[in-house]
Length: 461
Image (cartoon, rainbow, N blue to C red; front, side):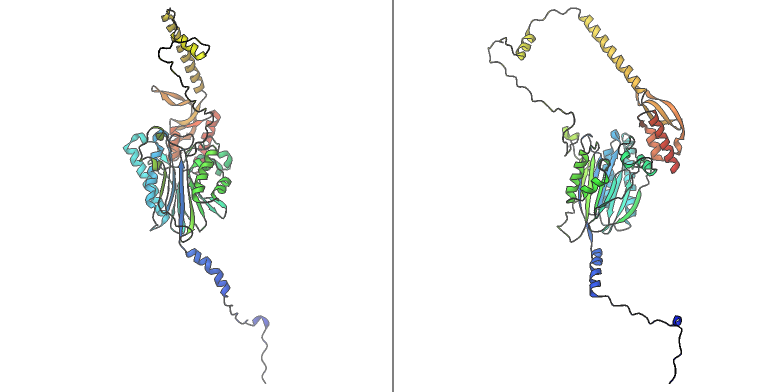
């Protein structure tokens, strides 16, 4: 009988292991997740815009549809920011269909077209020069959203009770937050919190943030203007978003913003990501709110000044007193002298008057008093103006001016006070335009601080 040679242990080849077949239970556990990911998703949406308790006009515009969500906040005051925001939304809403190409590229193109369209309006009507709008939109393709963002409107995602801000503000105070110089809480009350660094204005090319985000069933999206996110912190927004339906959440967000003291228009667009065959059927009718919905209508009287669904009580408003009825005496009745003060006033009204004497002297004295009061008011206004400062442009440099950034009868009410070494040409186009329009300051030190921040912002680019 032959002997088998010994083989060292370290040279022995182990027998191949045969993988254990997956059990039916494991296959059943993985199947629902894969099936759910493959099932189509859709949006259940709501939108609401309110003029607020302070502004006369609503310069926000919002849109919500099966494939597109968008919020634009117009800037410009007399330059009609409502036209800018509504024009942008009317251009962006053309995206509201299932994307046939790259969603991010489609969003970038829509923002560019909105920018060009605003430029055409400004060229046609110079009175609109200076108008602009922020823009935040989300284009849904059934599995993810493509985000386009310019300005300080925001997009949020609520998932499993955790709120995530998807966008980053293009504002002066956001740059201070990024540098660690101020906190989020301080930014809410900063005097220059409304200084936007990028917007769609038809003149200066903006550089929008463009990216995509995966979504899944159960997610809730919020797009809102700074009238909401400017006064509500993330915890409060998450608390409201986590309740009930999108309609209820939109109403509560607007109501809570106004109760928190928002002095701006408030616009909120809320959408749930749901399985296509889950729950009640979804109404696919798009919603258009704010200036984009109001401009086509001819409004007069009180409606023209804007109305608010959540007016509430204004501090200091005493309301109107009901008129006191005055009954005429019966025909033929004489005027009896009574102790009633109203009757005594009526008697004095009809009593004989003494002849007027020295009328011209009285009129001259009254004119002198009026002129004196006007001179005192003018002197007070001048002394007050010399304590006002703003940042503008002088000889190609960023300069502190003393006085008011305005003119009266062709006379400038502000004079160059302190010129900095910061050249206007080194600033970005949008920031340069903002400085040329003048940046208000609370004091001389505040004006110097503004220039320091502008220099830091320019140096960080």
